[in-house]
Length: 179
Image (cartoon, rainbow, N blue to C red; front, side):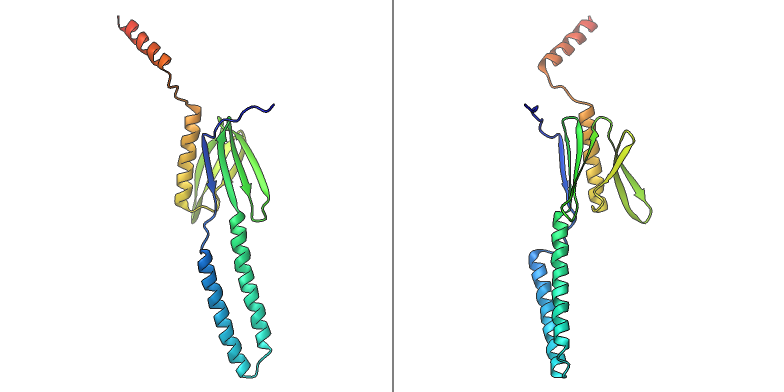
């Protein structure tokens, strides 16, 4: 029988920004199709009818690449989970391949390293191992993620015990020490 898993103390899902909505992509497809149709009619009327085939192939290529790019971006992501004393990073790349990296939560440190002229680098490190997380995030989101993750790790390392019994004994100790 497997041990019960505790609820995560921290969980974040990071995904790259998707530029464009499905409606926006349909608008782009319509503009590309309309522009291609106008040019095809123009070249056909000038007697350059073989251009029509190339224009069709070009439109299919542009629309296919837009669709593939959107599908690839939809697959990319990282799930960062702090539970059961482990900090787990589950990464999915554009080909839907998964990679899992685990760290001992007590020893894991979060660092946001500035890089001149580029976005900073957000790293997790513990016991000689490190990995970059959120490489596709904008600077503000990296800062927010670093702060939230550092706070969650600090709370894990420094638990607060909210026990009436402990509070009573602390009061009793202070009363006895004061007399």
